[in-house]
Amino acid sequence: MQCGLFTDETPSIMTLPSCICHKGLCILCPLVTQLNLVAVTYLSCCRSALMVLRMLSTVAVTYLSCCRSALMVLRMLSTVVAVTYVFSVCIRYEPLDTQVPPALPPASCSAPVPCIHPRLLNLPQWGEDQKRVMSFLSPSSASECDGGCRALQRVVRSAQRITGGKLPALQDTYSTRCHRKAIKIIKDNNHPSLFTPVSSRRRVKKFSDVPQCQKFFLEGKTPNLPGILVDGMVQNQNRYKPICQLFNTIYRFATLYDTTNRIPVFSAYTFSGPPTDPRPHQPWMMEPQLNGENNSPEMKIMGEHSQHQAGNDDYINSIQKKGVNRGHLFPCSHAHDLDTQKSTFTLTNIVPQVVSFNNGSWREMEEHVRGKLMTDCFSNDRKIKAYVVTGAVPSKSNTLNDALKNALNDRVNIPDLMWTAYCCLDKKKKWMAEAHWGRNKKVKRKTLNPETLGALEEKLSEFHQGGRVQVFPKDCPRGPKPTTPSNQPSWKNSLKIISSKVRNLYNSMMNRIG
Image (cartoon, rainbow, N blue to C red; front, side, top):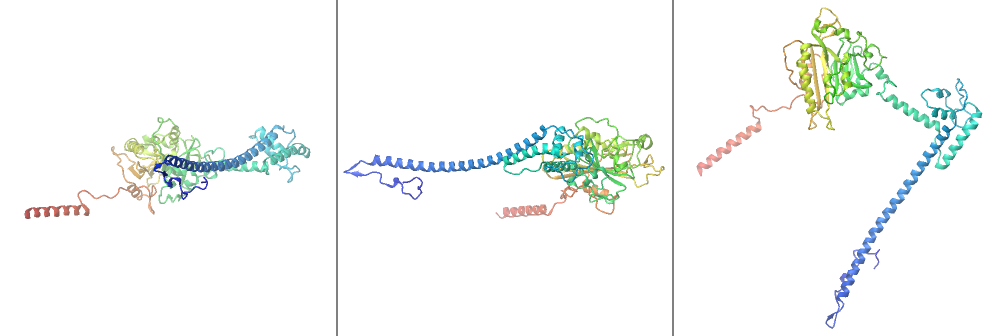
């Protein structure tokens, strides 16, 4: 019986008689039993051998695959070694002591390698090694090309023979990488000192013009305030200016500023935890972009007076004159790190707020909201995160008239109403929202009770007419789910009560009959 031909249909020795009797004596029984054991062991060994052969074939295939991968790796390594060798040869040569002509090089170069503009060699940020390589790629005379270029060509040809393929031109590789690097730097808005995009150098028309500014709004959607901001577009661009608040090269929060009333319409930010540092003693800053389109986009300590925004002069003796002080929309107590705390001290984030209101019920509300955000709001990775929008409704009177009581320094509007709302995911990953608002006036100490988001939007509709007011997207709940009052039972409860009474009546009748 051959091992390779073994199948389940092959007759086994176990089917033979267990013994052969001759003259009443069973003489072959032990012998046959041993033969059976030998046969079974042999067949088991054959099956094991088949499994071993299959495993060996798998190993062989894996080995061949590894060999093929090894060949590819060797080819790649040879290419890298060859290119490295080329550059090492280029750098090893000393640059030629020749004067670079001020004129542009001719369109065609007699050298076999491409020409580089000679003015590139004078760039101050280039290192000596880069200048040496470029000096070989841009020969200024045929004699120089005969020496350095031919040596470089020989190295390139040797490298091509080693790798078995054609190497890309050095200038093409260098130009492609430089172009790719330049595009990456230009797109990086975190480095405004190097290349700041035009959209952030100028006053933007909408917050989405600066991608880093969208993260302060839930789903990247800005509030909808009819007549001011609709579908992310500013309606009156000469009056309302979107500001992506930039401090120490990082965007901290977003503000929509009213240059006529010289107060913010709202400030939007993300809450990520309580402050890690005490309240800083930060000087008040201003927004350079509001004084000119080409000014720096980063907030700075500037002069005391500005035409399109409030200045420090406007708040001099404001408590004695009007009974108001500087009120944050993005409070310093809601900023997580020190730099973000400092960034809240910009006058584009400030409104004239009645002192008793600012230091009383409004501050208590800010502390209450901070506690709620720390315990109830989490992101998908279980970190504290909530979206907050705080705004102010200006008084309707013209602030340019000195006789009006709601004008600070004849320039800055004193708002009538202040509001705030937040939306976040709770521990069960369900959206939750809460809102507060209060009159900016001197009243007895009053607690600002939590309100629904829908109630706030309905309140703001009184001041922003002509469309739908929406502070957050539709995912945020506008109000509590409708529930049936306990004193008015539902139909389901009524049926239960009726069924219970019928059952009791039936039981009492059966007891009387029985």
